[in-house]
Amino acid sequence: MGSVKQVAASRVKLARLDELPLGTGKTVRLGALELAVFRLGDDTVRAVENRCPHKNGVLAEGMVSGHYVFCPMHDRKIDLNDGLVQKPDDGCVKTFGTWVEDGVVWVDVG
Figure: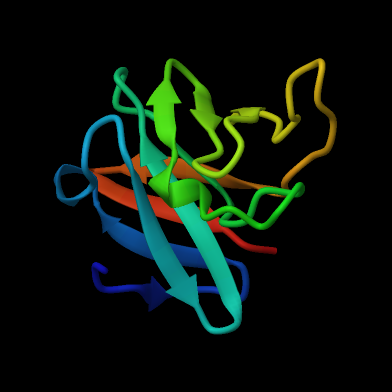
């Protein structure tokens, strides 16, 4: 896990972009909050709560394809943009806004 620095109440520095693995997830803990953070093929970053809404599978361990992650427990397909589980399954995970500034990845946990 990379260093985590909190600057404002809801803005948290996660890592340098080049520290995140490309196309796989990474677990980041911020106090009681556990995030699954993904660096996608276009160098954008997505952060979602790290538990599948079905059986609490650890999403950071899931397979990534495009902007989707597949739950490692039951292969449910989750959109990393809005957190929605794709049909025919249902459910949703919480998403968190992310952005990259000067090679540093930030997340809004507010």
